[in-house]
Image (tube, rainbow, N blue to C red):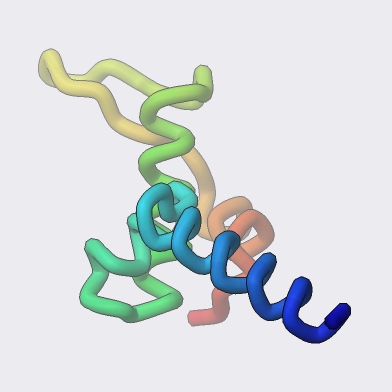
Length: 78
């Protein structure tokens, strides 16, 4: 009986996730399943939308962050 309940709960969570994927999952999907590209895209979107690291140049917004900061934030390597 408990096994059935756990299975039912997993199915509900799975269906909910497929209807409402997390922002990171959406970025991975947008990056054609490439996890590293998805992580980087997620951080770029976060920084562009919710952070004060934007710099205006030639009338456009740019994210001002060092390579080392990107590496620390994303845990990606070169």
